Length: 50
Image (tube, rainbow, N blue to C red; front, side, top):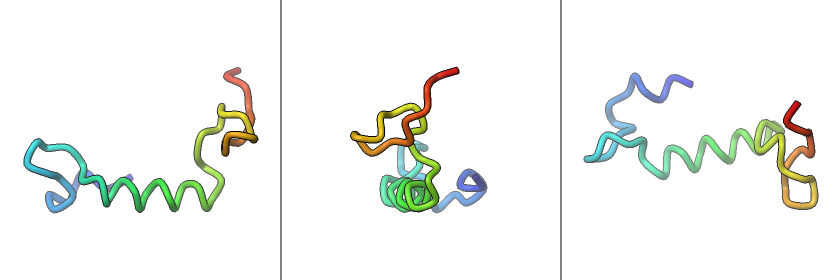
């Protein structure tokens, strides 16, 4: 993820801005790339850790 190369993505504490992360989380969820190990009933994919 190329978020680090744009200084505008960082806050005063050098952390990636919450709105940038929120957009990225939304995109990951839409593509099924979020919380692989979380149970399906909790919004995850339901895979185990192995």
